[in-house]
Image: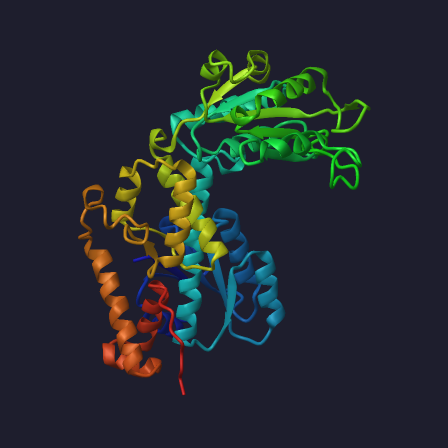
Length: 451
């Protein structure tokens, strides 16, 4: 059970709150000093703080001092301030000081349960988010805690401030564009554009105009002069993805640009100077292509001043779980889903899968699982792994089984009670506060009808 610190000197209120908040391990404090002592000892994620504390119980001064101390010692703790008067300005002052929410007496068990549960839910999400950021390198854009990703982050950090041309080598879906963008974001060109072009996705007849632009009348349909991607990247970074697919006859023109830093638009006669940082990437073996005469040797050496290999996801140890949690938080926010984590079975499935599609495959699975999950935890079934019996462990976790059974029973009772929460609680043999707590805990979507 989560620990909930309640700071209130009224013994009657203490008993009422303890009864109302029976899903939590309640710790009480009667004044500011006791509250700070309890905070240090128990480190609660959520605190209910009465602003009218002794020795100034008729005013909010002591409560606001307690709030200030709590914020200083435990800035991530969710403090719900409780006020016994109609002075909304005091409550707003508390919110401005960093309180999570406020509640005005008298105590309503249902309402206080919802507020406290939401505070715990938010605290849990923020804790997980901070852990991912600390472990996964989210700030750099290169997420992962494995040795290979630590090395990659170090390489990016070293080369980013330079003008060296980098060649990223890795399988499809390993995040080559993410790495290229990280180089740009840590360079001296961050205020200028990052322009990416996939050489494999554009027909050969159009790639030259996409890269170099064209003058008006250069060909049928060229109604006005148009800049190419190289010009559009002026002052910033140009990312040439899948450069191994660039047509052989276009490679010479690209080489000239890289050497001279000037271009000519199609149909033009004027040389245009362009200042850009170039990063290239491919999933092909360029050295073998050079040997086969399908890729220019001089261009290869020009774009590979430093070669950065990017490991496939299966070789990144625990990174798959860090990435999965990161994507889950991202998609849960995007789709307003209430999923918070993964079941043990899902974690095992994520670890054991070979990930032939690398990060792109993982993203797709997490996105669909976020939408399909029917409980707070994503299961192996939600991820689409349930049919792969040999790759997942049979889920016999009693906590998971109990949560599913509770959710199903609540939904069935709610339907039989025609949407009335009081009747639903009576059928299930629990109090209304307990029922509300279970509904919020399991993220059950119910259309309430109290009439």
